[in-house]
Length: 401
Image (cartoon, rainbow, N blue to C red):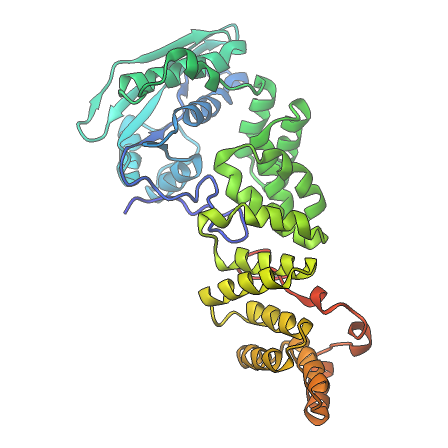
């Protein structure tokens, strides 16, 4: 089985983040190492990582996969190699073998900002033969065009360009200005989340329409729980295909938390074609319930429960739905199941008391209410609340809101 770094930005993990996608079962897998900076100029230090990131974005297509930076770094660590040092060719081959890559790309960069020369080589990991050098040259201000030329030469050399013409491939050229792209690349290597967020914001300040930077900063804000600010960034990142599912999932969660249920429904519904996990189906059911569409709420909550029968959250949500429908027997039955799994859930005991009272079982209702109060539930606070507001949605794989 091919190894990939476990890189989870999102709540549920499951939704195709840039490192979470399933590996190709056929085709060519590339592992890129940043070209060595022979000039040793600090001002050019960002270019190596920028080159391979831009090239990777341009050559990826069905049948062509590029292992992400996070995987490369994880494998370097697994191989007990220095993470921030220039590796020897033998060490790079070792990492490529661990990755089970089909092709290893490495090289060097020389010159200065007024005249750069980038040389790449592709090593076929099956034959261990190095292909002819691939070269692009020009001033740093033309780096985007150089990246596109190198990407084209790699595909052409490996006979992977298919029917695409050179003119069409030029449309893949990076459009983000060098200054903003440099800040973005520096952000990826930042030592901590706060430093990374600051650099990402600087990249966005220079180029407001920078979907990758918006996605990364939105993810950071999402993890901090600042949904209002996260939404502002994430909505600008929807155009990036490799982030699409992750971004829609985070947006749906944030919309739910902010009470924007119609927008949450649209975000979660966009994930239905991708066989979403239980958490998404639960959240979609909750959004429909809060919007008052009970039939669809039932449908998605049942689907979620079929995937995980012992989920206290989903079972409680279904119980709340049945209570709203005034199907008190069904609500009590579901609550009994949920409380067997977690007897310390105060809201469950409170809802059970209300359902028992509505059914006319006062003695058991009082007993359940006493249990709820013991668990710090305030009946006066909840008495006039809309039960739909008691529903729980998942912000992550391990907690709900």
